Image 1 (cartoon, rainbow, N blue to C red):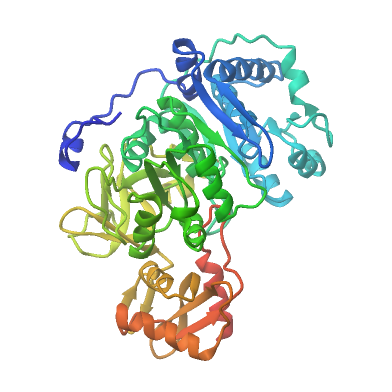
Image 2 (cartoon, rainbow, N blue to C red; image 1 turned 90 degrees about the horizontal axis):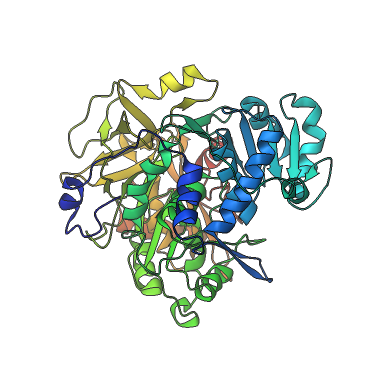
Length: 543
């Protein structure tokens, strides 16, 4: 853990060192340790939309996960086998992962909105033996069972359905005591499939140490999470690393109650209401959620919030969102950066250093982050290159599951290449420019889309924006902006010209969008990022 009394970033780094135990199991660390020490301590608060609220203590999670662990063993699972968890934010999701990890099996978080094809690929590639799901997931899995020879059991939290067995009744017959499998920090624990920006998704295999590797970044991005009264919630699904390892597991490890709520449809108003009703003190809000919430007028007067920290990651925030956050939440949003293979490696921390809008932060203590060339050679300050992390690092993935070639291609020497471009300034702050293929080359300039998108959001008519390069015979590429307008604003040529001029006068003449197209919605990933490759493909088809 970080020294919570650090006086500066330099002091924080000087006083931090990794202390990895010889034996470590995520399941026991986030559940049994607290259950044995303070069994009645609140661990999880489950808020059903429009319904009841249920509270689970650490003792509850231990009892339920032990019963499920015994059930998994009775199904013939062995350490190293894979267990899929196809569930939204709900208590069963938490204790399913805990149970799998206690048995020494490898848990696989799966997103509930995946279609049959996406599920079949991940379950076949991983060779999952058991899946724990709900009624909706069971219906998707039923027609796939014949094509998944390794899948021997499916349990449904909503009762027997679509060929799946009732989880509760099968757990009920098992003991509430369980002796966890003895694991080391490098033993495999979790496979998280990447979003598949190129080719098929790859399964990033993490060891049990990945939780410990996350802690410094989680603490830093929440101004030292684990303060008395802390209580955390995120709209990010627990099937993604941002929900599972940035919020759920670190919070449980630190003894911070986690609020679980799955909105049928996320709305800015419902998010504000939950923050107020549940007296949330800490929240991770992805940039897309923040942009939606920003459109709510007079939010700081409509809801009485008591937030202590707001963190955001996935895409760089600009001055507009930072300023809005200060007005609305009364605090500075801390940005963090990472990816499925190596997460929470860069962060800002408003309690130690002022935010620099458009710059994602500094290397989290314990992680060696640099901007390097394609051979892994560190580059001078203020030089555009590959954002990279040096191994060994406890938060870094062990390998891609069943894909040695892709694993090798991820590294240049001892540097793991994130696939993102950026630059580091003279003070060590890291500036995210974009994905390798997001950078726009126009008239010899290399242009990052993030800064332009941030500028566009300052225009009073713009709700959301996506910026890409469109092929151009004269300039190589031109900047093209896809714009979602605010409610009540009508698209017009004059408005497009005004938006382009707005950027031109605020950024630079070579960065303004030479084409502006109004759209009803932007293509988004399931984690809330704009899919720029889809916009690029659209722009390329236009010729």
